[in-house]
Length: 108
Image 1 (cartoon, rainbow, N blue to C red):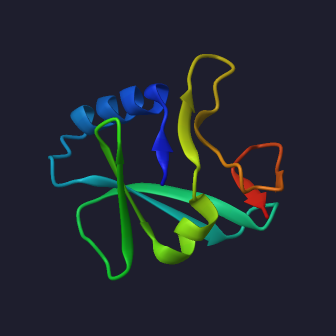
Image 2: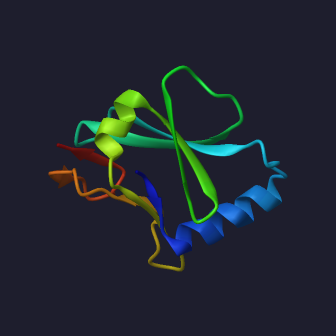
């Protein structure tokens, strides 16, 4: 399961409203090679399902990820931090052994 913190849900709802994403759009989350720690997160709105998609819903937010990415994301919580010291969206990933200073990449 991939979880959504209340702070992330509120921000996703604002983006969805501002960009006029309909109910058929969901949040696609992927783990890609790259970043200073070896793996990086990618997050987009999408409305097309792919083969082997893993589908989750938490707090009314539908999250879709491919099977490979799910292995890295299992039990991860998507969070959002705003304000002057905020870092935007970030993942609280219990599977990550190491993260970089910017918080955008990780390794196992």
